[in-house]
Length: 210
Image: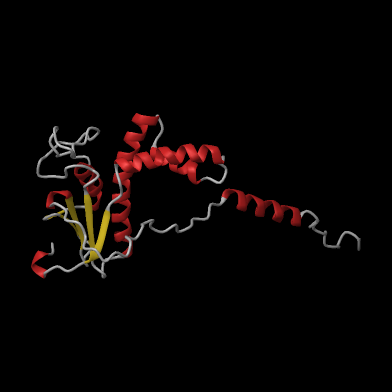
């Protein structure tokens, strides 16, 4: 009878193995997000004045302290920014017989908009009180516009998207010989749609703000 009243023992011999397996499962299935930041190259420190740019080759984008976006003189939702930037960059407004004519542009060729993607500049002005998340969203839309145009031309010329080539080029698993080939193609596409974004502090009159 005394033997029947003993508390049965729990076999905990395999608990360490189970915990170890759970740890391995967690490490394999969990992705840790890293903040890669915004990749921008600062202009060189030159004493020479900036070159003159025609007004139609500048797309003015402004973000005010109320997180409202203004493109030119119009208030624009951020969801429309990418489409507007693509239309501006891909306009190809230079005449057919001129030196700056863009043969690969597929825009409306509006004479009041940009002449050529090589001359097109996006002027981004952001108020210091604007939310960081909104500012990053604006930057993402600008980058997405460039990537869409670059992908289009990369697919036409090389049969592979520009972003895919960049991903392979940046991968440590890619062979050096392949990286050299990818670099030439990437540079060629970047020449067709160079990333030209100028940022300056916002100095607007209250009457000009949306």
